[in-house]
Length: 264
Image (cartoon, rainbow, N blue to C red; front, side, top):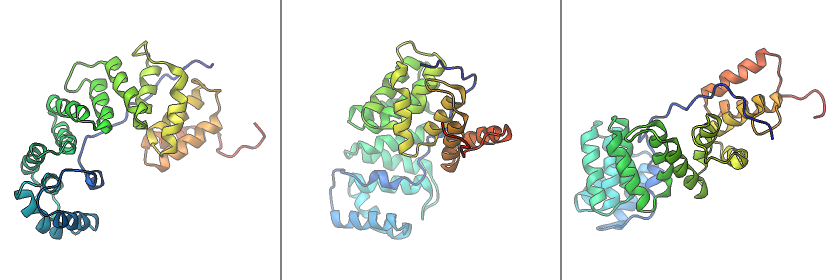
């Protein structure tokens, strides 16, 4: 099996921001109050009719509906219809947590991290995982890997990333590859890494596609193949990963083409 000779691999720039990920919220939360009104508010959000959504959701949020409180918190966090106000957004997310929404922990943790309050963010992400939100295994892993909110610990990060992979969340594949290449944790087994990256790439994860490009370019765990590397860099760049575009242009400047001129 080829050894890894990659001399540089950049960690992705990644901000833990809320953005407009309302789709994550439309799952089973305990509902109190007028369920039909909350459903109408959700539908308005999906149509980006934020004023209508606010009108429908605010009375239910004030009445203690966890789902409505979460959505109102996101409206304030993102400045949709209302002035952007992170303090009010956080207050509504706190209320949603107290009303029984484990998902609100994810968004409040993301808010804390975007504000640089990583210790608070890490604690909430861990609590979210304990509540059964396996999506946040990845978030905890990233914070331990970067040393944000706790002492940097690549091996502890790897444990969370592996659990994330085991729960079919392949966002972690890139970081597992990163830890392996940098030899930051002896317990990382390289035999499954390419498979993880391929599974992540099938889901259009650009970081995984970029990592596969590096693996093929440098012959890490696979036979060196610059044409295959070009193909993976191209796929990653199409999905918005700037570093992949730079690698693609570098190989193109060396005369490498994505189109093979002879059989492999």
